[in-house]
Image (cartoon, rainbow, N blue to C red; front, side, top):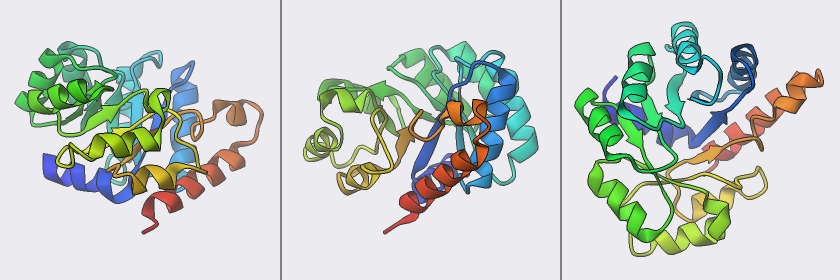
Length: 213
């Protein structure tokens, strides 16, 4: 799958769940619930124990119907390991130019993190395909994103931080190409409390919100 196809896939669904978990098993359970709810983009963060192998397993199981990516990638070596394991996109919380270069060399979509206008422009110029605006809620959420997009309409932005089911539409209205959603979607407490159906329902609701006009 080429970069354009990956970018189109992300832009089609617009919801990128950030899967953080205390164990590989819990991450896999969350992935299954998200898929059941219709989510077809999955960001497995490197904070999950054995994260690269989790990426490998999810890609092997679901790579035909879901776009599997790696998140919280801080260096080029980790990016390369994740891509070798089957990740089709890489997300970072900050800009590391060596990681960007590695992704460019591998022809893999990369979303480096940035927050200020200077950082956003730097991440884009370095070769980021999409810029992760993080933590977007710290500077005003959707209203801040709208302010960024006004002078930078050509840069695809993926806000992460503070995105909820109630406000996700405002992020899209502000110009987000997609949104990263953490615990407001991937609520592991629901799994731990035996309320898996609620997680599936939440995934379905976010999925519907992402595909709304």
